[in-house]
Each structure stands twice: as C-alpha cells, then as structure tokens.
Amino acid sequence: MPTKGLLRGAIALLAVTLQQASMATEFTANGILDLRASQVNSTDSYLKGGFGKFAYSNGSHLSIAQAGLDLGAHWDNGFAAKLVLNGWLDNEDSALGFSEAFASYKGLPSENGLRWSSRLGIMYPSISLENTATAWATPYTLNASSLNTWVGEEIRTTGIEAKLERIGKFSGSSHNLSLSAMLFVNNDPAGALLAWHGWTSSSRQTLYGETRSFPELKQPALSDQSQRSNPFKEIDYRPGYHTNLDWSIHRTALFRLGYYDNMAKPYLIDDGDYAWRTQFAHLGGKWRFAKQWQLVWQYMNGSTLMQSPDRVDAVNMDFANGFVLLSRSFNKKHRVSVRAEAFRNTDLDNTPLDNNNERGKGFTCAYQYRVNKNWFLAGEYQWLSSQRPQRVLHGLDENSNEQLFQLAARYFFSAL
Amino acid sequence: MSKYCFTLLVVFPCMLSQAAETLDYAVQVNSPDNNPVQDVVVYLTPIGHQLPHINQTAVTIGQRDKAFVPYISVAQRGSKVDFNNDDNITHHIYSAVGENKFSFQIKAGEQHSKSDFNHSGVVPMGCNIHDWMGAYLLLVDTPLFNKTDSQGRANFEQVSAGDYQLTVWHPELKTADKQISQTISIHQTGTHALNLPHALEAEFEQQNPDDFDFLSDY
Image (cartoon, rainbow over all chains, first blue to last red):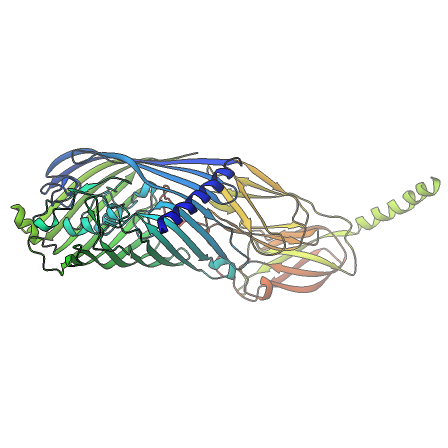
C-alpha cells in the first residue's frame, strides 16, 4: 500500500514536472572518468564473491574505476530532475546502469530564512560526507572509506524526502540548520552483504537493479538465499525512514546526525532475497580548522536482523564503523589526504557455520595532482587488516592484511 | 504664449543661478582607531530644501567566481540595476527580505536588468543555488550618495548649500539599522570627518569553502 501511495505521488510530481517542461528548461551534464592501475596483495575480491576487501583480486589490474554521468534538467520555478549513470569496467564484475533518478523541488527562503526543499525518487540518503563529487565520487581519495563503500553498496532509498533549512545569514547568524525526513521503500535486503562479506573499500557503487555476489553460504538452512543479493528490493511493503540533522557554521564546520531504519519484517523472503531489519545511527563532521585544512570524520552504529519464517534469528548482528580523514589542499594544485578507519561486526545469533564476526582497521594515504581544470593524477596506498573467523571455512586464514597501490588519471567535466 | 516665454526667460536663469551655488564636499570615514574605512556607504539627505536633480546612474552587480561583485552597491531608488552573470553556470538570485523582494534565474554569460526597485531601503541578496553568495544593495532617497574609496573618502560634487542628514551605512556596522546619522550644514567646500563607533565586523566571505570544482549536491 505505501508503495502505491509513493507511486501515486511520483506520478503526480512527474506530471507537474512534465507540465513545467514547456517552460524554459536548462539541461546540465557533469561527468567523471576514472582510469585506474591497481596492484593488490589480497585474495579474491568481494565483487566476485570472495573475502578480499578491495574491488580487485590479488594481482595487477587496469580498469575503468568509474565512468559517471550526472544529467540534470532545471526549471525556473525550483523544480529539477536528475539522472546519474554509472559504469565500471574491470576483471571482477563490470556493470553499466543508473544509480540515482529523482525529481526535486527547492523553494526560496522566507523572510526569516526558512527554506523548504524536497526530493522524490531513487537517491542516496544524506549520510556520506566523503562522496560529495560528481556521480558520488570522493574528491579526497580514490577509494571511499569502508563506511561509505557500504552505503554505496547497500543503502539506496526510493522515497520522498522533505527538508527544512534555516539559513542563518538572514538573522545575522553564521549557524545554519537543516532537518530532513524521508519515507522510503525498496531497501529491505540491506544488511545481507554487510553480514556475509563484511566491510569493504572501493569506488564501486551498486547500480539500481544490480545484484552482488558474496562468499558461498555454508549453513544449509540458508539455501533459500539466491547466490547474488539484490539490495534494492521491496519485500514486506512497509516503508522505512531516514531522518537527518545538519548543523553548519559558515565556512568552518559541519555536524551531521542521522538515523536510518528500513523497518523490514525480518522473517520474510521474496524470490531468493531475505528482508533484513537494518537500522543505524550515523554521525559525522567536517572541520576546516585552518585555511586549506579539512578534518572529515564519520561514525556509524547499528544492527541488522534476519530470521527464519518462524521468526528464529538466523543472523543477528551489531555493527560499528568509524573513520577520520585529514586533507590538506595546496592552492587547488596538490592535495594530500590520510585516513584511518576501524570497524567491527558482532554476531549475536547461534547459527552454526555462519560466523559473521569481523574486526578490522585500515589506513589510506593519498596524493592528488591537478594537471589542469579537468584532469587529476592520483596515487594512493591503502592497507586494510581484518580478522574474520568465517574465512577458515573457505580454506583461508582468519586474519588478512591486504594492501593496495593505485595510480589513477581522473577526468571531471561539467557542461551545459 | 508670450506669458509662457516670459516665465521661461525669468525662471530658467534663476534655476541656473541656483545650480551655480553648488560646491564640492567630502566625507572622511575612519575606524575608531583612525584608519580609513573603504566601501562604506555615505549619503546626504537634504533637510528643509529640495535637490534639483536625481541621480539615475545605472548600477552593475556582477556574479563572478560564484560571488557577487561588488559586495555592496548603492543607488537612488528607481534606478536601473544590471545583473551580469560572468560565470559559466546558472545563478538563482533573490532577495527575500524587505519591500524589494525579487527572484530570477540568470544563465551563464547573460544579463538581467531591473528598474523596479521603487522602495528605499536595504536589499539583501543571495543565490538559491550557492548559499555562500551574499551581497547588499542600498536604495536611498537622495541623489547624493557614494561609497568611500581606499582612503576612506566619499566625494560629492555640486552639492547645494544647506542642511543635510548625513548617514553612514554598512552591513557589518553593529549599530541600530547598521548605520549612524548626524545633521551637518554645508556652506563651503570642505571635508567632514567622522569615526565609526565600532570597528566593522568581519565581512561575510563569499566563497565555497570546499576547494574542489566538481562537487555535486550530496
């Protein structure tokens, strides 16, 4: 039923949007092309169902680590529509499709600096403070943190969001507040990949409708699960919600606090995909403590639950992840970033042969050189150490120390 | 007909002679510690007499590198204001406060002119796409207005002798209505110096703090 309501809303908004199409429409196109050479010390990549934490399996790789195109249409009355196409070409799991598609409305601020805006469609909820560039790329590093790589892999909301902002400068204040709330569908299996392959780090996002493989399940009772998970699916026809508060201080700092709950009924299964009740709180911040210096941090803490049809816990897991990133820009010509991160999954159920415990930490060191307005050359070293008992059942060592060296040429463009 | 000609012959030279009784005048604005203050608006409103002309000099407010240039503009109400977008992206310029509210989108490289700023007062402006952009247009009811130069001087030419309300305005001046006001008599060429009661607060910095050119709205 809620899906029907959302659908009706979507059609109404689309109709309004199309009606506006007769008015002056402005089209925009922004893009990114990321050509990557990678040298990995690891096992098989998570992208093809292994336990490797990077997007590449052990060895050397040349790949298109992202080809993204952000297409926009804007109307004078504040309505806009956006479609983000993304593609990856590599030896692991190439794909081409779209990652976001939504209509939006942004009103004008009122006399006391209040502004309403809204989004409707398939979109990222406001969680990542790293993935702020074109097509959800990150401007700081080549690979996103494990926290945001998971957001890109399993968290995508099809819904309606309303946001109220208070713009401080209207009252002579440098403090801005923004509160948003969203009702969404099509994210019920989120949590499956986090439980079964754990935290990963890459520049990969899951396309809408794309499925992702994961290490073979050893517990026979889980045999109803198909071999690839589809995170963007509606199973229980009950919407979830995301709510977010941003507090920013003009030019200096941003603080973000949010809560996600997909409200999935965890005892349901649909065509090979279980519903996972996944909920988490996220907080983070950006602090420009000196000119050209930025400190970005995020922390997430939550749980996911999947049950048998008779409501016995099959996977009951708590998770936590946090990172701190320090970035220094040198007059837009050079950028050096370092990032430290740590994560933990705690398996609370008694299901044998399905041990989803995981602990890990990582370090990333990145350098970017801006050749001209559009071209960037980047080098990055990443180390990720993790302990995961389930690996033993697959003939691997419980502990792994993975390393990744990458060189990239990234081309960003923006065209009208 | 002859009566009309007579009026013209008599009155017109009178007006000319009145116009000849003008003089150059300057206002010097200093900070409390006696340093000249630039880009402060100074205007003179006549008291007990009327000024013979209006100053309809067009004002240009540019959008360059995602910032308003200049940050502060001043014009007599009713004047033409040209908005020039020198950027290669669209801006959505608005004012949501006061009696001169407006909103329009302006595409890359285009100009948008407005001649309907009919109310005097402050017009704070912003861009609904780039929230860090901000600027002010002050609309005054007198032809005698200017901004102080790098020496802190606001020059006025051909000022009719008489009494004036001198007003000094700046958005970062922390007084009531962001201005100070005093009555002065102008009867000879000269300079009136004044000190601001407080130092100006830091100017609103119109710059996207994220120094990366390809950011999206996430």
